Image (tube, rainbow, N blue to C red; front, side, top):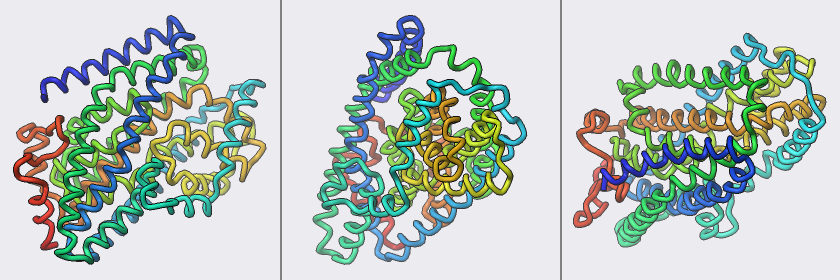
Length: 442
């Protein structure tokens, strides 16, 4: 099966190249293929809720001390705040140094596009975000596609099973079997990845074309370079100092997930596989189950860099540069407003427009300048967010003593390959109970 999955991801690469070709040569046909990409992403999102639920319930239900779960969550949130701030500062520095917005002019078409994005971004508030975490019903949390709602219900269920003690064991076994079923479904869905990648890329290239990229190449290149430096220098250094894990080995291990994100522009499509791969790497179920879903809503390094650079770009392009104090205040607001937007293509653009509408309305029209290239920038946003969450999971596992470094070395050296068929480490005849029992002494 592993050999077959290698061919699958080779097919994804070929599909991406064909999609680019179709989008350039036949733009209208490329745009008509958009439903293929949309459908594939929808299939992935279909199983995210159940996977998060199963993973967290099994992780918490198998740990006897509730304080351990609180420790994991506290460390994760603290790290997310610090790293998001670092990303914000880096974006500010680069944006002020290169000043990429000078020399551009706003057209009527761009102004209309900006008004549409501002309308999207202005709808949400902090109160709406907090109330939105509470689902209408326990079951709807698994069907509405909200990561935070699934996380809340899973936490409640996990603690409830923990309090039930031995009486909750049969329910845990049922959740284990359901998790196995959902991961099998996900493995089946992945075979549609080449079709989804082809449709998504063809639609983007067909709608954007090459002309829109020429005048905006500076901001795009600067953003990509900044993201690469952030991941390579900041995340790589922290990962080595804390866990003694080589960043490039970890990124290579997650290569198929990066390819999936690149072809769909959504980091959410790789969320279930990241949880499974982090557990396979040696991170405990509790740490992987809590850190990864939480990070998808609160650890948005790529989005933070995007918001800073895009804001400075727009201010410069419209001839209304921001003072340093204004930059910090506006971007801190955007960083808070962006929570929960990870994985949704275009959410970063709506957050940018909404933040400008609230603080500097005269700059909102400038959002139209980057509407044409936002999809290409969302690739770097998603990839950076994903890399940040992978590193965060290893770091939190190390700090809580729930990361098996010897196991990680075997996995990263290729001596313990990931099972692409089931996305689980255990064999059918042993069940998943054994890994969970190992966490009980914690």
